[in-house]
Length: 475
Image (tube, rainbow, N blue to C red; front, side):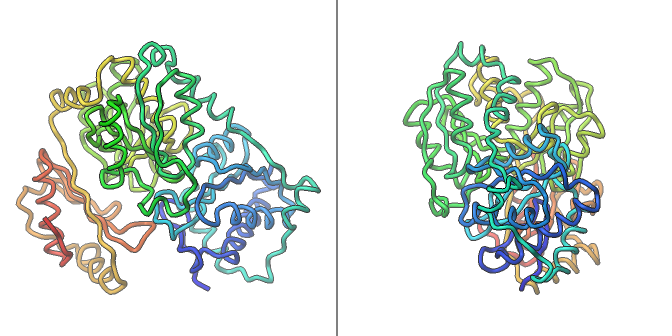
């Protein structure tokens, strides 16, 4: 049986290969032992799941092991957004929570995200220990209580925390401003779990809504359930045809957001993050630092500096963003892949809250998204990112790791190097941009991101690195 390996976003594995009942049960057992060591078993655990293949079944198997250890299970009995599960852990003051999801990964993957007290992503120290413990277990170490018997005894209990979660978002949003403008919105849940929640919030705010890709499809329509420029072509078309004000998409478990502006143009996750930070500072009058990971736009730093704030850089993995936000009482934290959070909500990314806040921004400012983006670039200068990734064999990964991370060799870039960081991968800072080379924490892939004053310059920086590493690069 293949070993369980936790990455930056929890444990993710291919269904039928490593994501199998035996391994799911080992993760649950390891967590149960941890809870007992911490004397946290009496308060129990909240468990939820998304719409992926095998998600509900995996949540049931997980629950049966917990019940076998006499640990109470609060089971969310409908597919739910990951941020709703995180909110529930925080709201009910539970020691732990779990979401069965592989987030934005391809349909052949599934996985488990774990949350600690306060609804936070479990940090690496914790997941490393859990991984080691789970891999030591055998089938003989695991006992279960069948799910139906657990329900009969009360050790497993169904809960529906959706209303409290949605109310917590609506309490933070200026619904009156949205009602006054009644924006036209196209929603694309990407066959995931955000639709009911977003519909509830936006209908309450009297928005006009059209919906695409809302049916249950474990194959996500044959596309990657990640809201990016390549996957949101249908949403772009729908926005143009319906003359909508905004198109919004969320990934498979609804913790990431993708935006299409009123002209049908994809608005990058970096632009969304900067827009919302600028809005919170300038229009809402809030104060606080920003936190971004090492592969996210430095334009956020310029906004922070303009308002006398600071922007902190952390490794990839939202748990690092959450930790830095707590440490610095930061206002916003985000990443270039579409996840962000705002102080006062949950300590993790939430696509529903981010979407609601963006609609508020458009309505309060009275300006379309394209105009707001233009104003940002006029005030702070342009910054554009190029993002590429490649599948790796074990041999090619070892070769690149040896060259870049161990021998610390680099190509001769056409830009002047200021300094280099190996905090997470290899990041080269130029006087007028940057590039990062790092291995994915969830898939056998390498990612190269670069940022410069134009998209073509950013692409050229990636081209230089890819060519030097022997990675194919198509213009």
